[in-house]
Image (tube, rainbow, N blue to C red):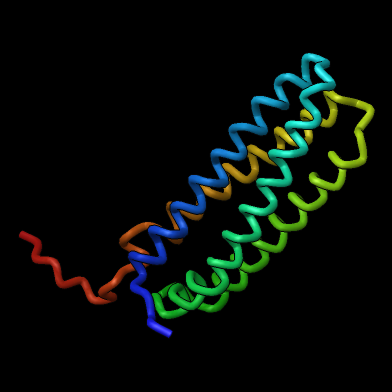
Length: 152
C-alpha cells in the first residue's frame, strides 16, 4: 500500500466535510417545512438523513483508516486526543443513526421532530468546524513535520 501524504488525507477529509455540510443544508430546509406543519417534508427529510448517515459512515471510515494514523504521527497530538476523536466519532454515528430510526418511525409531533433534527444539524456543523480547525489545519497535519520555512 502506498502511504499518502498528510496533505492528501486532509484534502479528502475536507471534501467529506463538504459532502456532509451539503446534506445538512438540505435537511435544514426540510426541517423548516416541517416546522410549518408540512407533513410532505418528512419523506425528503428521511431521504436526506439516510444520505447523511451513509456519507458520515464513509467519512468516518476514511478518518479511521487514514486520518487517525496520520494524527498519531503528528508531533504533540498524542494518543489521548486520538481517543477523544474516536469517542466523538462514536457519538456522531450514534446520534445520526438514532435520528434516522426516529424519522423512519413516522413521528407524530412534526415541530418537535424538526427541532430535534435542527439540534443535530447544529451539533454536526459545530463538530465539523472544530475538526477543520483543530485536526485538518495545514499547521497541524503537515507533510513535513519540521518547519523548514524561512522567517524574517
